[in-house]
Length: 601
Image (cartoon, rainbow, N blue to C red; front, side):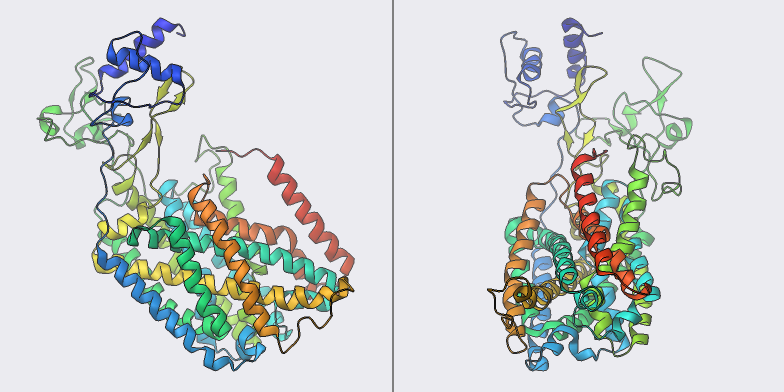
């Protein structure tokens, strides 16, 4: 029915099952809907507002209990993380005495890094807060494979790099990745590639600043934006001081601390948590169980209105208002850690029609787009030999799988404590059910800090703190690599070529004497730009999260740079015109599709 009377009647029925307390609030953006509820609650046809004092919209309107507050983290977590950050910064500054003012030492560590350092630093670039925090957040908000596709894609990229590119990159003797293009395609393509890769790394750095900032913001009780800027300043300082020596050897330390802490926490939780995923909902008074198994699990009783159905046992589970075991009925049949057909069944993520395709696309984008990552290839250039670069990439790819994928299992565990059936769940009251013409409360609002809260409240403090240090260390290892890469490429590959395109600019504007200083100076605006992007996505963007920015970063270079990169080594006669057309058409197609295709979900 659609008449005004039937609508009001249905609203009255819903309200009859809720606990209404005297309060004043606006729970709906639509003033007419708000007024309808006010008139029924206040029993006054002239009312336009209703009061929610001592309650909340989701309880007053939906009958769902107000979300419980999570206790603030113990101060020890913040102290431990800041001490670890300070230690990494000191080590980074100490390496300034190693570079001795030489640009080759600064940019590619004197081409002297052994296998164990190359492996650690490559894996550290892959296993960052985008991969770890992004993985756990996406698997918490959606499901296992939505998070796991990040470390899977990143690990595949390192293995592909080992097979196809690492040895060639090392033997080329280049200082930066755009140098490889310059040798085959000329200066114009070199500059175009530089712009594309820098744009990519602005997003990569921003994603890691979001992750690091989220942890510092929660632990230190400061604003997310302030935590992002603090993170940017700390990483920038030691990166520009020591260059790739600083980055490489701090990466080794960060890997030793970070990977072990993250893996220990992940495997501890997987092994010891009683509920690996939310169980079938116990429900609330008058809740009807969907099958006999759930009914038996909770000692259900015949329903009052239908004795053939099984309902919540109020006498056992809720004998009094202050002694109730209830949940929100979000999982009638329970959840699972992993649905094994999620990546093969096109209907597994209904009603989102393209979600499976999106996950496969994410793996493809990361696996191939990362081949044009400035930090990955800088480490291949810094290897002692081509063999070390090849083996290091392969081992680092396997480490990415081992460290990253277990974090996807933690998503379902986090939902047990902070999911839609938990006491801490928040719901959007002002969501619309078109079929009934009524506001409904089915829209769960995932807590963007849920995994951090899980680490500080639900696991042993030592393990939670160790994992937080590990994620911060992983984030710092990628942040410093991104800052170094952008400063290096802009000063070496763009500014040195300006004189070739603009006669009014001196061709020796950047030379061997001032290249190092210029790279350090140029890193400043790029770090600031990434911090601005991170602040926007953290605070204002509905998609804002580490995983999203990671995908965008390598989607940019996949569309523009990857095909000409393969042409450098696998085409008999690399064509500058072909490379130019590949980059231009790739960029145009990517931008057009971004602006024109509708977004599902």
